[in-house]
Length: 454
Ligand SMILES: Nc1ncnc2c1ncn2[C@@H]1O[C@H](COP(=O)(O)OP(=O)(O)O)[C@@H](O)[C@H]1O
Ligand SMILES: N[C@@H](CC(=O)OP(=O)(O)O)C(=O)O
Image 1 (cartoon, rainbow, N blue to C red):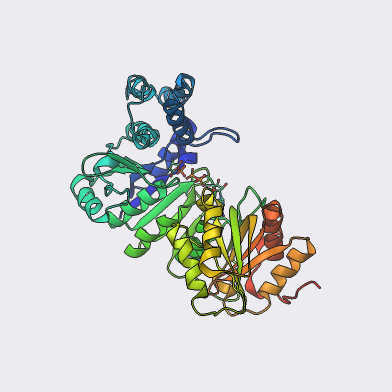
Image 2: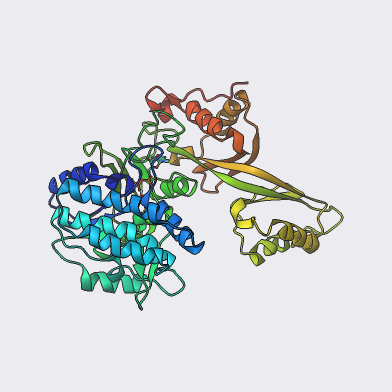
């Protein structure tokens, strides 16, 4: 039995958390394959080491001293090593790193990767397992994309049967150049390792007792979701439920490996099991979860009715393609459509993009609606169930939240609404309230009668 255990930044924040991890690893002989992130926040307001390392890089690029920053980062590792009585020469290793970093001796990616590297070094000694560097396991192409074929070969060649500790979040090209995954990508490292080692289970350990039905920072008391499908999880992670990186789903799903999200601070809690199927029916929650993201804008394009409809959308969309901008959603009407995009994707090009659309399709009108937030209400039990949307919109109306956009996926597992950013938290709280009682999200059978309150 092989279990891949990935411990996120919140689980390796300090020596106390290292001790909890040792307890978890020692409790199960199948837990011998460990992936770790860089130290996360120890308390609210604290910084993640990865964020600090990006800051070091920015200081170096602007030729500003970063000695204090480096000293703070180093201290976090020294405290862990001292408290656990580790013999890894962290002070020597870190000061060599700091000296080279402050002289601009690293690429951004190599510099930032040292966060996970030092955690893994300390964790390996503490758990009594060998350290294997991610540069010897996770392979990248030169363009920064993962090479799964070479990763599989490297894992086969370098992995140790008895277990090991590997840093997450990075890997290297054939020439040894360090490359990073996306932010939060340690989840992907764990998932690809699970696939390559044909693991029986991928355990993703974090600081909450599973995937919760809403962001706990917005909805106090949001309950863990016991079972969720890959499809639902991807919808929720993509829409901002940051507990698991959305791309981490694919490697384990392709290999048929179950994924479980567990809490390092409460290992006995069951957590959330993610699998291909989950029960549908009256004893299951009516919705699985709610997630949302700020930072969108909509470009509303109205057709000139004297002109042909044929090719109108295609030509308008070709402009987005030319600018390399992904259209996230596209609510349509008879004579108009809205292209919803991430504001950051068009921050330097919005005005020329809009004027190119103007030129390409000569619309009646173009309007840009900024400061939008999108919120997804996701659940397999929404399929073919009348009354749910009415209930949701009725409750939002009652709270005075104005809905600027609505779309629903063809698979009917999500309802996505766009609201003004200022209404974001209120909208999430309202949707949660609409589908929950004091025990969390209500069961499908308990929601009767589903009636809009107007
Ligand atoms: N739906 C959700 N379920 C659980 N956690 C969520 C959800 N949405 C947002 N979060 C946040 O995600 C955090 C865990 O993700 P992250 O900080 O990346 O953890 P780690 O450092 O363990 O990788 C939680 O502490 C919680 O605040
Ligand atoms: N340390 C990296 C990668 C990662 O996966 O971190 P975490 O496990 O804390 O989400 C980041 O902050 O993006």
